[in-house]
Image 1 (tube, one colour):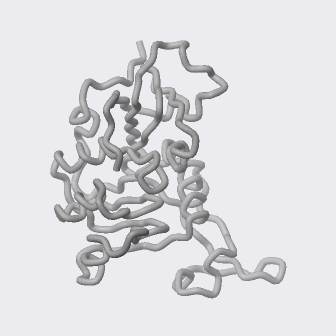
Image 2 (tube, rainbow, N blue to C red):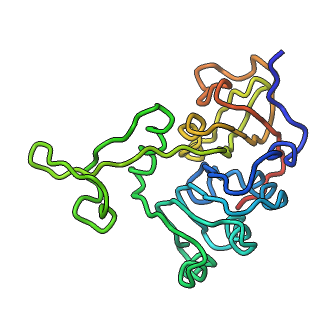
Length: 226
């Protein structure tokens, strides 16, 4: 019998090691698996590389991980919060955290390439800018393109709305951003959902992430918001 359910957040993140590359779904705090990340904080692992759309929006679980010195590097499109300076700014200014800045569309496509087994792709985004320094370029139809490498993770942390014991997931509207593509780009995929429902409850037409991509599933009815 296939059953991806685990009984606690601690069990969900068990075995994640120091130095892991963690893919984190969501856009800002929307769709972010904050409870799984809090469990990661409690686990005590260090030297993590976080791949996410945003670093920290200010007062959130990513800021807590940064304050605890757990994150070595961030790969993201938006490292700063919208409300001013954050802990990231302080750590980056003093050389205590690394940043790989990636345009938003390029980040999503690099993760998709990692999931699809694509060795890289050329894009016009960032051509002629500092973000293209050190990367291979090619002129195609008179335009300069930059070669971007795929992104793969050791672990993907996802947040869905509902799931079943097979690991099938549905999402709430825009909160699914980056979550589905990250499910195919990591060796270990862990998802939190607000509700685990019986098999057959989810409309197959509404399942965005099939259970074959999910390794562990934990129910978090009273999820934290950021």
